[in-house]
Length: 171
Image 1 (cartoon, rainbow, N blue to C red):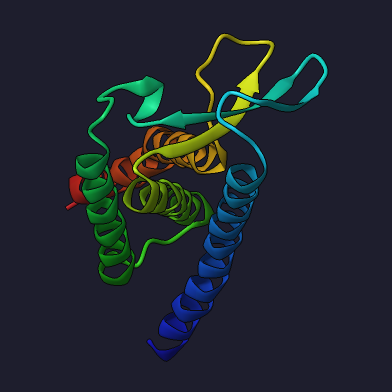
Image 2: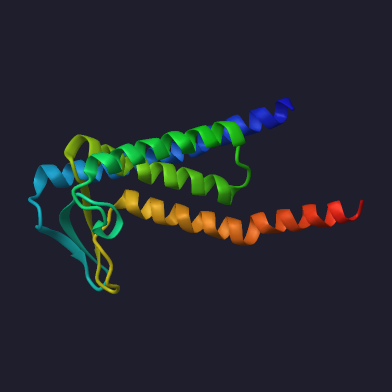
């Protein structure tokens, strides 16, 4: 039992550090953009892949719920609280599940800070090779976390359930 608690504590420290790196990178880049560029300005490009353009987004993904920044900020904070409680109570196991929770938390917190302190989310990455809304590091973390969660549920969690069904059928 002691070893399992120690292992979870170490995992929590590692995944918290990863979350801190994502959140810090997101904050530093957004702060630099706001301090040095005006909205709509093209800041650079990676030819054939990305344009870096400063956009203020008062909505959620794909600019849904525009001008509902306060409500979206509150939802983001509540989501972060729920993921932290989930982590502490359920103690997720496995890299995929832990990565999903950490990425979702990091992205939600990064955008929540923008919404609460600025009244909008700072977006700046525009894909050239795919018609997609401008996004930021926090958004990328949310998408990666959602993909990791779906992959986990589809391919890993289901196997666990099938094994439990097989064992219960043996009784």
